[in-house]
Image (tube, rainbow over all chains, first blue to last red; front, side, top):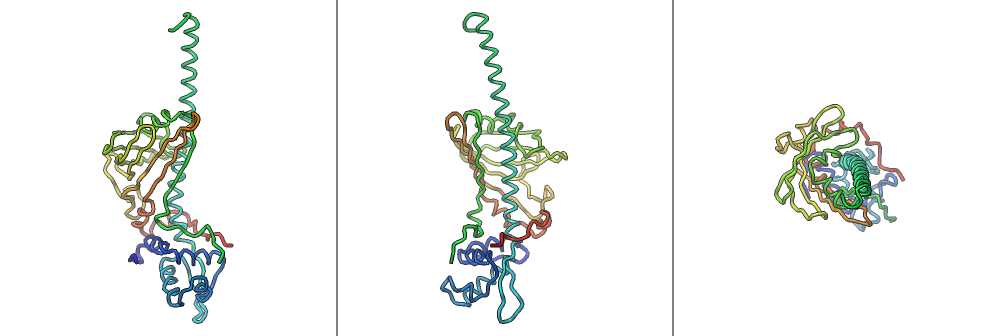
Length: 131
Length: 166
């Protein structure tokens, strides 16, 4: 597994998300909190194996667990995910807004070209034929 | 168990794809990307301007684009062209830079963490009936995040309410 230190939460997030079982666990938790036993059910995994995944998710700050010793319900903790998404979104906004401007520029450019070619056409008419 | 499609993505899946159809022939859109004077007309989000732009359009050549915020702060980006197929495709790297074109970390611009190294941008141009479909792929944003410190967490007004509860 990728080693990630606590001082680098984003690495933790991505390392935690790199595993399909852990993503499935997160998807399950998106519909409400669940116990380790409940989480283990669909995966045909031993409880210790699931616990191991939960520890990774917990370290990454993706889930939080209740304090009760026996039944420690897990629930989703969305902070780190949102942070990662937010970067992608920043880039997306940057491009979308730049493309809006490129779009306006291209329209302007083509309108000017039309005007220009109309002028030429008029000139042609006046002079009879070409130029 | 019911499959949910909104399961979190892996870093590998975190490729940004932005698509846009421009009502202009492909050659014009291409020029808009490759002619510095034209890039300066659109580079940067709404309200920004672009006061400078240099492009050395050949494989291995560099570019240096500048955008200025409405408050007057300049941000420079640089990169190296990796692939150029006329009117069809441009692949280049993208990094933050200083005004001389030296790659700089995010801290240079007050972004916390030792951000960027680089991302890879692929732009494809496809002509459809006189219009142009442009697809931009940007890879490696996730990698940039891996170097980030906890500090920038606070930079984004705590958007972190919660994932959609079912």
